[in-house]
Image (cartoon, rainbow, N blue to C red; front, side):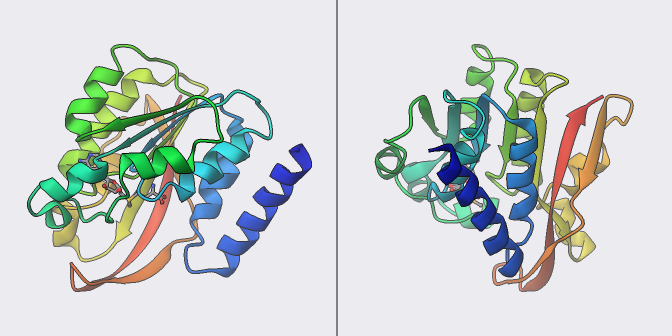
Length: 218
Ligand SMILES: C[S@@+](CC[C@H](N)C(=O)[O-])C[C@H]1O[C@@H](n2cnc3c(N)ncnc32)[C@H](O)[C@@H]1O
């Protein structure tokens, strides 16, 4: 069983390195290094990443707790969500539940993280690994981080997606640059993965390069 998980891990790394989303290597390598027992993913989307995160963590721990946050079908009830969050069109919670059904300890939270995360942090702490990849507006990422930073320890790692190289005016509205660049470096250290992925963003009508950044408490 473990050998299959190892093989999947190596093939996934290889696939990412050869593909157009090379930065995801960083995500999987980080989880491989941290060996987390608990994972938060903000922004579940189609659940594919959840599978990869869980299976990589399972190489080291049989019982991995996964907490996934998304608007799920609520996304479609809110006007202009794409414009506000610049995110992808999510699958339903039921659909994701089915997809992750074969794993134990799956917890899915439907709703805007502005509401769901503050509730969650009253009952949970010391989460080992967090992937922040939900809403892409500066306001939402800022809100996500303000909750997440309260439930991490010195052993935890937080990965932010969406550190952009793009026209400066866009960074006031989207991406995690503002949050990362204003971290207190006496409290947190961060590392930007050296490989970024270049895309043409149809909504922004602009080319952008996306990086992942890891953040740790010192
Ligand atoms: C980029 S996708 C996530 C991709 C996924 N992490 C992956 O690696 O495949 C962003 C997701 O965040 C969700 N989302 C956007 N804004 C949100 C918010 N304010 N609260 C909760 N979820 C949000 C969207 O519904 C979408 O599924």
